[in-house]
Image (tube, rainbow, N blue to C red; front, side, top):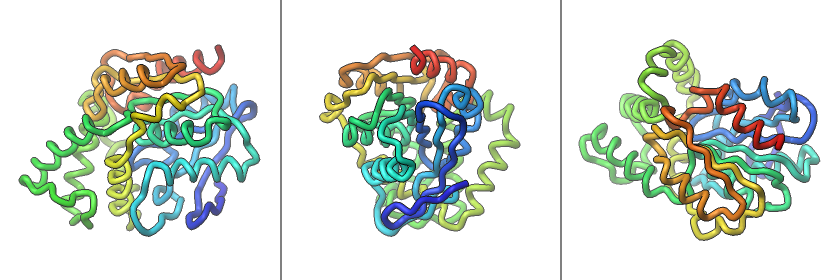
Length: 274
C-alpha cells in the first residue's frame, strides 16, 4: 500500500508487475479490490496500477459534491506522482466515466482505452435507479442524492444496487462473499456519504458531445443482461468515439468483469496485445 497526496485528498494505490502501465479504475461504491480477478492475469504483461477513488477504501474524502472530472484529475495526479506520461486506461461503470473524462482532458496520457459497462449520459441509468428508489422509499425520491440516509434505508438502497450488478445465479453462489464485502464497506463510517456523493457525480456526468475528442483506440464492452446500464448505452459510446470497437458479452450483467473474469480478461488482453 502507498499513499499520495493530491490536492486535498490522500489516494491509496498499489502497483503490480512490470511493463507498459495499465490503470484500472473502479466503479461506484467499490475500492480497488474489485479488480482482484484481473490483477493476476494482467500483471504478467503490464505494470498494473489500482487505487481507491476518493472517499473509498483507504483513500480520504473531501467536503462538497464530487464530480467525475474531479476523480479523473485524481488519476492524472496519481500518474504524475508515479512519473508516468502515458498508459492504458480501463474503467468499469463509474470508472468508465472517469476513464472517458480522463481521455478527453488528458489525451496525450492515454495509449489504449477500455470502457466497460458504462455510459456517456445517464438517462437510462437514472431512470432505472429512480424506479428502484421510488419503490424502496415509498415514492419519495426528492433530493435523493443529497440525503444523509438512515441505516435501514441505505441498506435497502445498497441491496437494490447489488441486484442490478450481478445475475441472480452469481449472487446465490457467492452470497457469503457478497455479505462479507458489504459488511467491510459499511464498517467505514463515511461509506454512505461517499456512496451518495459518487451517485451524484454519476447523475451529473455527461460526455456525449465531447466523445469525438477521444483520440485513443478504444474498446467498448458490455454484458447483454446489464440491468443497470443497458447495452444500448455502449452502442452510443461506440458510435461517438472515433476509433472504437464494440464487444457485447452474452448472458452476463453489469459486473461481468467480476462475474466472468476469464472471458473478460482474454478480451482485454487480446485488445491490448494486438
